[in-house]
Amino acid sequence: MLESFIDDKSQQLIYFVSRFFRGQLPHRELHLFVWDTLEEWAQLKISQQIPATFREQVFWHVLYQLEFWSEQDLRHDRMLRRQLQHCLGYLRGKTRLPHDCVGIRP
Image (cartoon, rainbow, N blue to C red):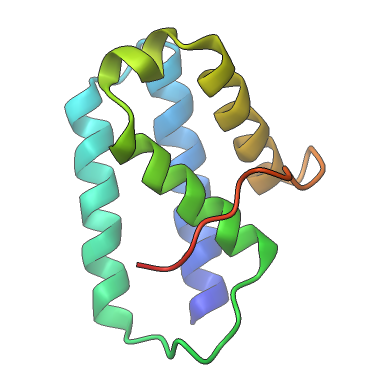
């Protein structure tokens, strides 16, 4: 159940962030996706005893970054966008594990 959730939501996250970065998705839609994901997560009742995989850690890191940074930063900060793109590449299975993208479960 946990792995399935992270896999499914990672694909959705990649889709939403990629569209946002291309200017095809309003920031509010990205924000709603994050909060919908958090609501779905809360319903799963996953034990905190189960260790998070690297993939899950990167997933939570990206979600946190999307809420932490302003719309302007997400659109215009090249370093931030590059870091998030690297994380998305990892979630796609296309890049190596980013060293500075470690998120924790909510």
